[in-house]
Length: 66
Image (cartoon, rainbow, N blue to C red; front, top):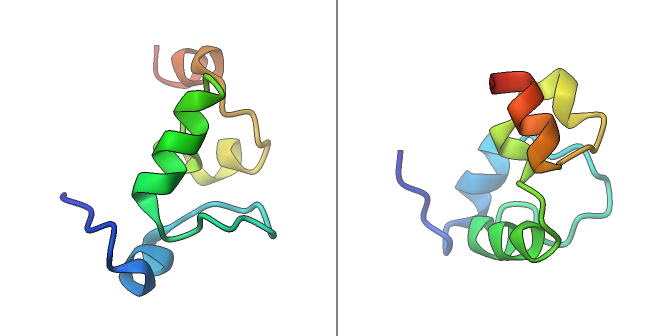
């Protein structure tokens, strides 16, 4: 599935980010750059129940999928 970073409305409809004040919601490119700069992954790579913990670490990703 390709993501169009310019299509914010469509992306928001698919975004599972539960952080209420996120200014990047729907802008997948900005979201990815932001989280990778913090050595994290975006919430969309996690199941909803794990995403809600806001632990976006590589370690959590490995714990879930490893």
